[in-house]
Length: 250
Length: 380
Image (cartoon, rainbow over all chains, first blue to last red; front, side, top):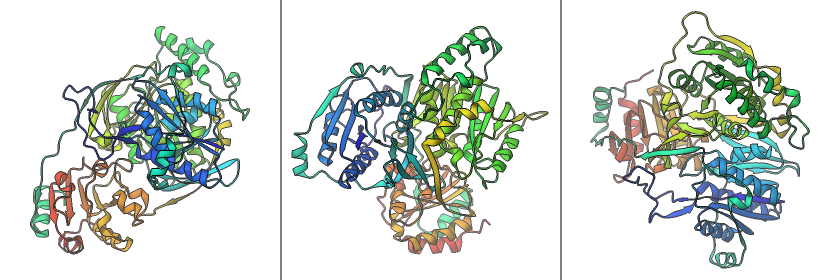
């Protein structure tokens, strides 16, 4: 079967976030960009399915400006077979991304779509669920384990508020990855070189016939109120005293 | 509204989609319904204000904190009147929750009985989203709200896509009926956003942002409690073939729920083992608190995933948060930096956690914790 994997290029998880002084957004100039960690996990899971003989082809998809191709190259270096870059400079929101994915799914006919559960920039956690709705497919969100008991089904263990929940989903399915699904591999140098020969197809939202105009406008972005600085205490006795008499919490 | 009746489709006329052969809502149909609503609004007909989606789980002993936050947001900040839909995994829990909600101010009707199925099959997003979409088509609310917990995160975007309306998730503040504040970049920035779509406006709310607002009871008689209509229930029937609940692994605990606890005792990587992590249980019990954990502790198998506090785990804001052996990575801070009082205990004086802590103790946690347990007054 074919697996489609969505990957997003985001500000690196360790980078310090700076809000622009004019409040228009987060400053991305000269900031390290990386593949969204949850997307890395999705790519890794797809590659493992290929290695296990469950998947025949893994296609990595990214949407956005030209630099997305670097992110696709990383996925190719990890083992994806080819890439698709949906090129646009419009700020894509989840609903538009899901619509673009829907058209690609109809073109590529995958059996499984793997996406990260959320992007660490907008923290939306929406795209996978929306895509599943558009396709009228089953959804397995926040997956910490994925197995294929048969050709018709996928079993997904999900991390939920109360613990773990397992669902049996009819294929085809959209699965979103959570932290503990796997530990992504590093691309080795030979694989990075091999990846340069793999194909990346470029399309635009216009080619796909999708209106990506946002339904949500960003009015302003600001930093949260900073916490007042605290104090390092000298002893447990001092801590208990402060908690009781100063903070009043015990 | 009666005026729009002629333009509404009945369940039998739904456009068939999908290979399952079942009848279900398609986006084209819902777009035409939206046209019907707009014309009914222009003719001055009243539409419903807000539809609240609430989850009632068997054995939860009443409404959970996410549900209370949803209802509080609707009551205080969103258009009235509101209708509440209770989704549940058990009839008893469903009816009990419905009764509780019916006594609240601003409620017009409480609907339940859509999903009282064995296991948690009734809470699966594939069928439930179709039912909600059908209900939206019937009631025509301007707003749809639910909690930003794993239930709401799994469900709401699917409903939103069916309605072709971009949702605003994890809201921490309502500025006005179309403008909201939500955290981005693990809470290192707050984004104020305005909905400019055709609607309805779908949103999910963060428990810690609305949970402390007390719910107002109604003056006089309570709201009507009714079963969800057969037509709406039928809308979910075909999608039931897509997924099946198989089982769950849940932690049983007498301790308070992590997202509603007054005190949280949270452990990190430095605890090194599951046995050591259990040392924190005694402390939590002394303080009448819940247990929490950093991602590293969960990854290392020291405790179950439902304890994880952070950007992609639970967001908590208790009166007192004790971060023990937790370094304070950005992703962890995202889940607890709104706590009223933060205590950090760590061997490393440079640990970032000390930057957000009100009180810090630098030292060996294996010495400090037993001493703390000894010297703390018992809260129980």
